[in-house]
Image 1 (tube, rainbow, N blue to C red):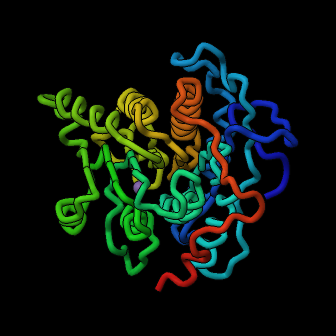
Image 2 (image 1 turned 90 degrees about the vertical axis):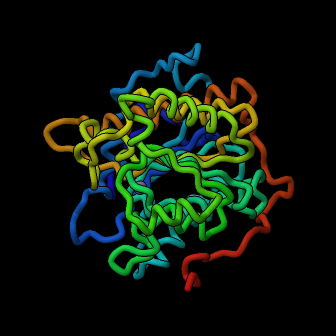
Length: 333
Ligand SMILES: [Mn+2]
């Protein structure tokens, strides 16, 4: 990938300044055989972000609100096999897991989630232990399959692999397309709390179900990773994503959920991703929706910083940080 990478929100960036927020484009696609277009999604999202307003109503200052943003060069890998690619992806994210910066990844298939979480183990709030982490997942799909078409690293297995890596808690919302196997896992694994779209969006009772979800998000304690599969929103808003599904969250539901996670008094959102972004031809709606979600995440982070729910922390030992095992994925089996 040559040429100038568009920056988040079209802002001028100082490449030499230490960033407060880093945007990590992850043009990862498990297979190009069906050409979903997720590999081009992060670029489309960054380009669209130049049209997003810099004003977030929860902030008194326009973004970047006195902070330094950096848009990294997109991840790429020459690795010859999938597990090595996942290792490369983990290695690309790891330098941004030190706790002194807020990383926001733009995907790419939802399969980016396990390597992103593996990298985040280095965060000072986790100290190598993913059981301390709560993952909040906005998604149409539960992503809890053990495998799909024989592939355990499929996007349809992202949440299952996150739990296999040792994530302590998973809160899902917007789910409306899932298998019996996934429903059983939701029932049997007490780390999982699922808020189905059928209940959240119900014409009767939806408001009560939504209030229960918001209360649950507000009550989260400890470090959090927020993973937003854009297909969690109604398919009309993101028609170009790999698997748009009707009956999803409205834009304002998604916004309110993001604010609730970042607003939880005893939680610290340490990292986030917006994934399954695809470039829509003929209309910018899909990539613009993704860019607005990514901007909302950044705005909510900035607000959490201002209100004292996020402070820069860094491993106290300088130099190479001792940490959890490496190359998780190469020796997965
Ligand atoms: Mn997903």
